[in-house]
Amino acid sequence: MATFGIEGIRHFSHLRASGAVDKADDLTYSFNICNGLDDQLRDGGHTKAFYWAETDCWERDLRDVSLGGIDGDWSDNVDLFFILTHGGFWDGVGHLGYDVEADRWLGNQNDYRLGDNWNLEWMLVYGCHTVNLNDPLHLWGIYQRLHVLRRV
Image 1 (cartoon, rainbow, N blue to C red):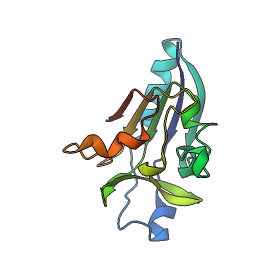
Image 2: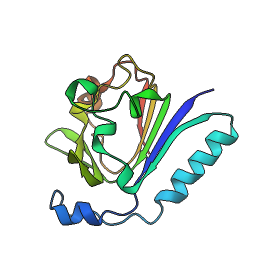
Image 3: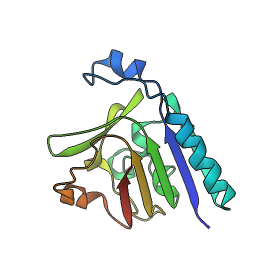
Image 4: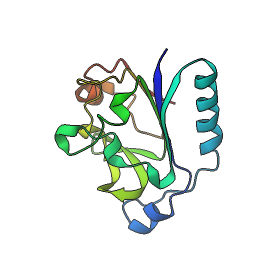
């Protein structure tokens, strides 16, 4: 059996007000998806380690400890990590949006080292345009022991 963590954001009023992005509409379906995944995984006998929502989701939850993040406590300390948020891809890098600036408004995939000395094997990102499907090698640096990163 696996341990899992979920982060989901529906409202982005603080991100919009920050000016960090041009547009970030609210996502009306976020918790239908997150709650459904949570239910299915627990019904399958898997163990929920955490489920963060809205402004309890922080950019530093994915950022590597060596870069000032806390991934060893959260995203990299479960077997499966799922995040639903706004995503984007520019300057050759995938970004994830948050509705609170707990260090940064936007996560940067170059700050991830997933699976390094921790547990994470599968990461699911429900966020638009976080992966350049024409050139997925831009993800190479984030893979330590991570087996799969899937944009859903």
